[in-house]
Length: 196
Image (tube, rainbow, N blue to C red; front, side, top):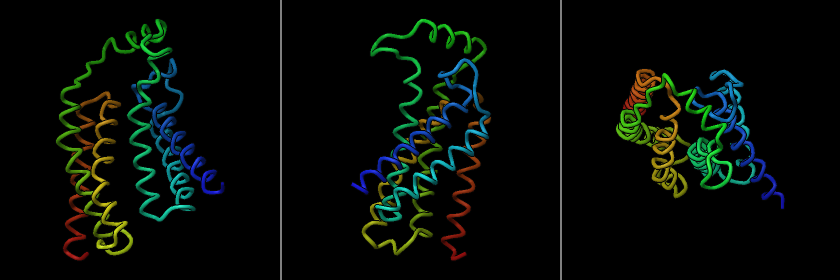
């Protein structure tokens, strides 16, 4: 009973973190105007994600708690944008459709550039993060939990990168952030590998 309650609270914290992050994104469609600035939403979301991780950590190992939070965030961030469009399955609310069309008058989606960016820059980012967990994560990489985490970490990180890329309004900013994160992760991986 205790572990079920803790797991439920951890999932709730992760869901609220995803919702708050979505509300702070420029492309959010839940509200007429964005209720939170992006950086405020990001800060609140990070606090809630850390809270979720600590709650998971009460019943799971460090690596399992980390993987659980990442997988749930991947799922939530992939699904949340679709919830704003549908009132009933298959029926779009006319008011929201009109608001979406109005908000997108000067917006060029560049969906193919964003998709390509997520595929080509998200995967190396996921590989680098898995490598950093292998080098700097708790325990030896030969421990079963850590081996499984390193192996399975690539997919949720890559899919999270794929989900988040559509929330950017500027392709240049998106490319700068993804390239910067890749540069940072591979620099850290190089430092880890050389024994720094």
